[in-house]
Image (cartoon, rainbow, N blue to C red):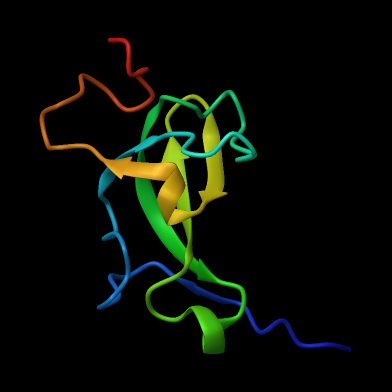
Length: 98
């Protein structure tokens, strides 16, 4: 049986690109980004940092698990999310258009 080397953290990590609980908007920065359309332009909250290869990724290059109310959770690269200033949005899951 092969052991899974992944590291999933639900606490802040010094050197990580985001903090737990941060409000973020899902964005597409490159034409070939495989961001699911249902998440695109939505605001969610960071719930975990996932390091598939901890020796190479820790602490600055995790996949970022984001929960969007009414949509679900998914993993994103740091380039696919933008932090949203507190008070900038009305409710989690709202689109960028209002």
